[in-house]
Image 1 (cartoon, rainbow, N blue to C red):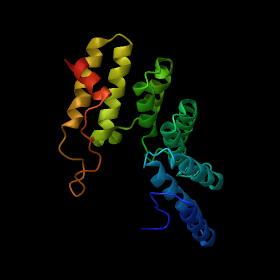
Image 2: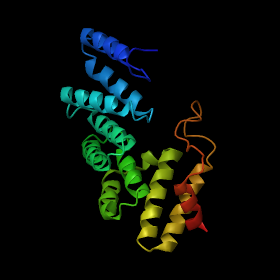
Image 3: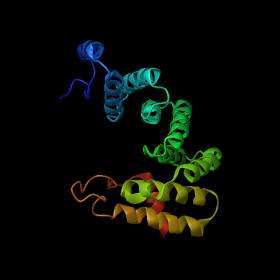
Image 4: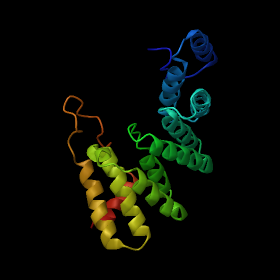
Length: 211
């Protein structure tokens, strides 16, 4: 395993990481980025603070670089894991804003933001979510079934909470259809971009709306 792709953290691992990082030339920002994302993706409360710390260190080196939006999204993900809702919302806003400034670097962070808002039923933020989608959506984002699912599901839940049951039903059917897609858009990587098929409260609600 690469020293900057650790999926656990300890004093020993941290010491070795810092030793190697100090010796790196020109790639320090990238090593911080990869390690921060890797730890955040574990969705563990003991690793989330480390992921947040590393992401913020990367941002200190490159506050507006091509990875800045991803780093703010990593901070947001860590905050979600820790149950820090307000901090997560602020970080997602940074990610969405920066992603809008680099349209050729697609991280789909506006969908992360939308998903977190609607799955927590924060109705007051629905207008902000819709604005973020309108400003950032590119049709190429929807080639991935997982993105289709989050996009249509978010809009379905917003429509339902706004009282438009007919619109919510149509959008929910579109979201559920993306789950049935057998593979992603790239035949060499058939699992890339697929929806993780599992029962959860959101899927159950979508099924109810689709009836």
